[in-house]
Structure formats: structure tokens, C-alpha cells
Image (cartoon, rainbow, N blue to C red; front, side, top):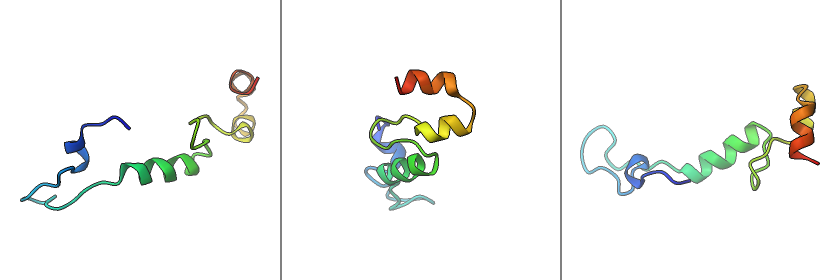
Length: 64
């Protein structure tokens, strides 16, 4: 993910309430994608999920 490293604590702050804290963005992306039933490599919603939500027109575009 392309975020400013300081936003996730790289390098961690030396003082204050977030001193020494670094967010693991990669792990958050990985588990978030799985929770949403999205493919972790393509970031597309799984075909079964689009069908469950009634998004057949979108499924046709994502999975020709």
C-alpha cells in the first residue's frame, strides 16, 4: 500500500501515546480482504459473493 511511512509508524514515534507503535498494514490488508471475501492477489470480490449480493451485472464484468 502506498501510504506515507510516518502514518503507520515507520519510524515509530519516540515520545507520546504512540511511542514505539508501528501498524502492520500488510497484515491488515490480508485479513481485511479475507473478511470481505475478496481475492487477496487481484482485490476482486469473489464470484460467489457477488452472486450472493445480487450483483450479477458486476460479476459479468469481473468474471467474463
